[in-house]
Each structure stands twice: as structure tokens, then as C-alpha cells.
Amino acid sequence: MTGHAVLGQVDVISTGAMETEDAEDVPLEHSEVTGTRLRQFRFEAAWLLRGSCEDVVRYLWASTDGMLPSKLQKISQSLSHWYKALCSRKKARERMRTNYIASLVDDSGNILNSERDLFNAASSYFSALFTTNGSSSAPGILENIPLVISQSMNDSLMRPLSKEEGMVGLLRWIKIVFFQWFCWIFAHSTMPKRLKLLILIWAIWTSRNKLVHENVKQYAFAVVRFSMNYVREITFVSSSLATLQNPMMAKWSRPFDPSVKINVDAAFDSSSSRASSGVVVRDSNGLVLGSCFIPSVNISSSFAAEALAVIHGLCFALDLGCMHVVLESDSLTVISKLNSGVDDCSLLRPYIADAQLVAQTFFSCQFSFTPKSGNKVVHCLARLSQESAVDSYWVEEVPPQVSTLVQADRRCSEPP
Image (cartoon, rainbow, N blue to C red; front, side):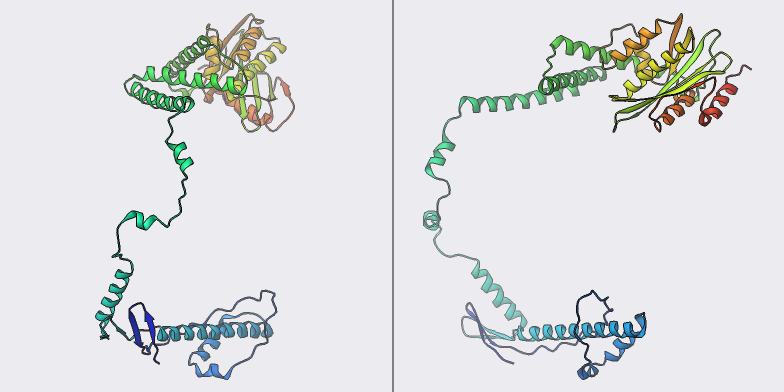
């Protein structure tokens, strides 16, 4: 086959047939019937000229399952697909033979046959195609390109900054300087000072959010007082935790007669703002005087749920007629606030005030912290109350689910 084509300054004068070996015939797997109407199958005698036709039929017969009519239908479809794939590969080989360049003619009229000469000719052609030898004058090149920026737009961009734009730039510069100053202060401060600085920034941001979203204005001294009280509370809790000796090994202990012990705990679900309180009251012999669990709604945080559990425990003990009580909770934050004489300014303030008010009705009332290992009974009670929407009370007993834990606490608290 011969042909002639012009490629810029290079002429293709002849082409040669490239002999390539046939690709290996790989039998195709049969495809399922998709519901579309198929053409009637016709077996072509030309298929037998392919040496692989018999192997394909054997492979399809062995790999296809089903009854005889269904099996023949699937094999016929797969055999048709096999022949179409052969035809497509044959056309591709023909295109390869047609596009094969046997020789080229360069600008001087010389015929190039070797692979190296063909490569150099093609490289020179495309290098010249993307290389300019014309004028490098910018006005001459750009004179026919339309302008996108008009003169009025250019004048607006080049005008001096207004007062408002200058203030925006000044504020941006102040933010950058403040951030750099803050990073320097934070890097050269001790850990207590870093804590105070972070809490103060958090309090300022909280005050800003209240002003923007709730239209509540806070004065500077209130923000500072809140920050100092928060720092004092964190320091107290940290020091209290450091003094605990093996908190995970703590067990429930009996109160001294005539006091009774109230154990409380809370379970909180932040997604639904629901909480549940568990309460158990026991005397100095470890006997249960009463127990209850109380679900609550619209609770803001887990700390509020723990503080509400304290109020429920005190009110339940008051209903049982107890006058000398010791209340235990595994929330160190709530117990610290109840025992602190400092005016609380956190979000728990209403709960703490109500609990202290109820505590004044007893002859004696003490608040004590216990780890979770000493508060297992009410922890289970609080979990049980999440499955109920009503208050539940027991007198001189507990629910069957926690009776084993009550007996274990009593055995561990027996005197030697």
C-alpha cells in the first residue's frame, strides 16, 4: 500500500505494511440477559477459519450453567461478542499498517529511510513549529489584542485610599501585630500565666457572643471576676486530685451513726439534653432506706446534671425523715462548689444555691467526694433511668438489677 501526505515542509512519499502477529484470542465470559431484545443468533462459517473458535466453544460450554435452552442462548451471545472483539482488533491492526511511515522527504529533497533520520526530521519540524524568529517588539505583538481593563477601571484602581479603606487596612495591621504579641507572650510565660491568659480570652469571646447573639452586655469587671473565679476553681480541683491516694481502689464506706449516707450520680445525653439522677440512701449498718431514679429534660451540661442529682438526693432523704446526712458524689467539681465559701459565678450557680438551701433543713449535712469505684450502685441506677420517662421510688429496697452491687458494698464495708 502506498500513499502521499504533506506535513508542513516534510512529505510522506510512501508507506509500508507493518506485519504484526495476531493478538492471542482470549475467550470472553458470557454476559447475562439484560432484558433488551437481542438479534437472532447466526453461526458464521468463517468463524471456523479461526483456529481458536473450537477452544472458545469448549470454554463457554464448560463455564456456563443452566438448562440446555438457557445454556445455548448464553453461549450464542458470548460467541457473538467474541467475534466482534476479533473484528475490532483486526481494524486496529489495519489502522496501524495505514499510519506507518516508511520514509520522509526533507527540505533539501533528500529521502530519509533510517529510523534515526526520521527521528531527527520530526524533532526539527516540531522545534521550528514552536519557535519564533519574528520581531520581539511588544507593541507590535499586542496591538491586535483587545483591552480588558478600561481607562475608567484603571483610574479607579490607581486612586488614593479612602478613609474607610484606610481603617480596614489599619485594623488588619493591628490584628497581625496583636497576634504576634500574643504568641510572644504565650511563649515566654509560665504555665499558670498561660492558663489565666487563655481563660481571659475565652471569657472575652463568650461576652462578645452574648452581646452579638443575645444582646446581653457584660462589664469588664464582671468578665475579669468570672475569669479569676474560673482559674481559682481549676486550681482547687487540680490540687484536690493530686492529693487523692489510689482513687480507683476506693470502696463504699458506712456512715457513722446516727448519720445516713446519700449516694448520687447522673447520666447525661447531650444529643437530647436529657439527664437522669440515681439516688440510694443507706444507714450505718449498710441497710438500704430507700432508692430512686428521676429523669429530667432540658439540661444544659453534664455538670448541671450532677448538681441536679445532688438536689434530688437531698430532697429524697428529707422525705424519708433523715436529719443527719452525708452526701457522696463522684463529681469533684460539684462537691468543690458546695463546700466552697466563695460566691460561685458559673452556670451552676442556681443549682448550687438550691442544694445549699435544702441542706440547711437538716440538723447536719456534709458533702463528700467519692471515686466512681465507690459509687457503682447509683451509677447503675442512673443508667436504668435513661430507659424510663417517669420517676421511680423504692422504700427499704433497690431495683433487682442493682441488688447484687448493694450486697457487695455491704460486705466490703463490714468492720474487721
